Length: 165
Image (cartoon, rainbow, N blue to C red; front, side, top):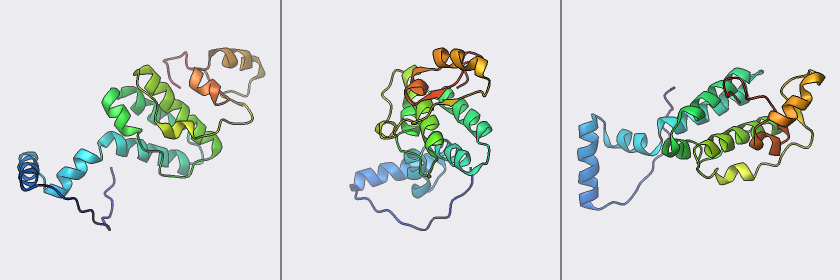
């Protein structure tokens, strides 16, 4: 993970006992208080999700970044997944990428039996269908085998080989 420049400050009010408890926990973790609190609030999964979504937006061909994002989402258990995707992507995405990322998040959440975050529902489905292959002969297969979150968003892919979306 790249180190971000710290340019802002956040103050919170805590009791004397709470501050002492945070200081002890930070010392046990070998961190200063700020680093300890940030590590607890901004999980590695959250940072990883946002970084991979940024990669998807910045690359001319986001195929590999989407595959990495899928790997991350599939590997997370319920709690870390919920934390990782709680906040909408912090970068502007094309309509296709916004729908693809939202479908991936909805798919991962459904597989973990947790509710998808509200931000996914705010993304309008594509008006024109997008197919995972240009081959006309595969279209019927893609239409019938695409996972439900993708179909709802007018994206038709094949996830049968290795369950990769």
